[in-house]
Image (cartoon, rainbow, N blue to C red; front, top):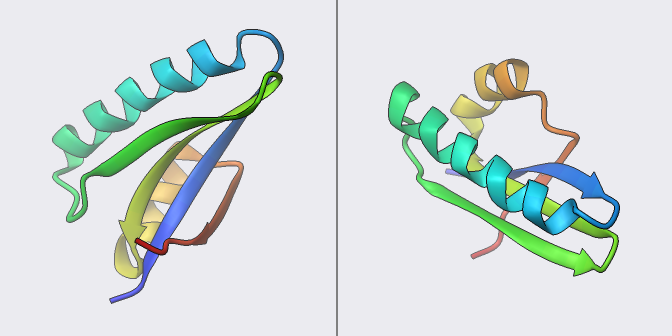
Amino acid sequence: MRKLKLIWDFRGPDALKIAEHHEKHLKEFIVIKKTNLQITGFEQLNTQHSIAFMVVTDDEMKPIRDALKPHRGQLYNE
């Protein structure tokens, strides 16, 4: 089954702190909705741009996308 990485972008001097905090909410969502995958994370791309992400399966993508409104998505390669 295909895995997709849903991504939320944060920019500015506090981007890393915001992305780290956003990941906590993604983990809470996973517990509440009992999703199949439990992969989340955050990354600093540069000093002004960080992301939070959640990995979902193809069948989960649409309802989670509609509920959480990620900024973008891409195929997830482990």
